[in-house]
Length: 277
Image (cartoon, rainbow, N blue to C red; front, side, top):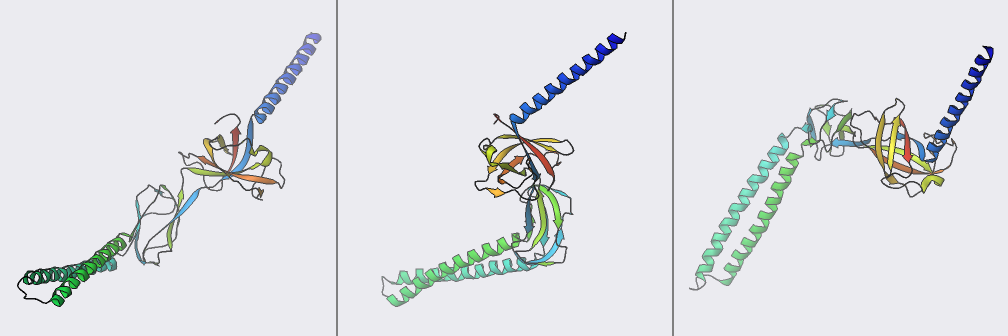
């Protein structure tokens, strides 16, 4: 009986050793077949503002709200710009009337040329008046277009879908064209910023499939979209496998983020499978 027990223990030990060796072998082979990198989610941001100055009338979203492309995000008090458009339209109508009168006068003077009822100087003056009127009408048309555009610029729309990261202004604030009102975080596609050592650089190529894994175990699929042509020292915020200062090349990996599980600054593990595109 004791011999059977001893034999069983020895058999279990041998089996454990074999299994452990096989696991280590497969892990080593997997490492050889892939490049493992460590990086961070680098979500893009865009500032939302107005192209004209004015007083903020309304803000449509709060921080954390999901915004779809083309949605109205905020608006200015449009009354001043409505008034300027009306002024431009009225000025255009006045210029048009002057041009119409100048054209009628020119037509009458041209009809008097055969009977000698008008001097050449009067004809030339009438022609000049018509040409000047047409130039003024073009300027008036341009002024109407500018006023109409400025009126439309009192509304700001989302250039892309995303999440409101910060709401910088409040209703009643006076803003200039360079002042941001919202900061929008673009959630899809997401960029992963990672760094590859020079010995592995030749194994990485554009369009290479990447598997991205978060610390919570979520997995995402992406592709290499950018490889920096310039070497740099490993940033202090990035841990490489070798954990030492070395010359590395920055990679940008584009990842779909359908469940919005990837957020800005999140550390991730990137695995690039060799031999896959």
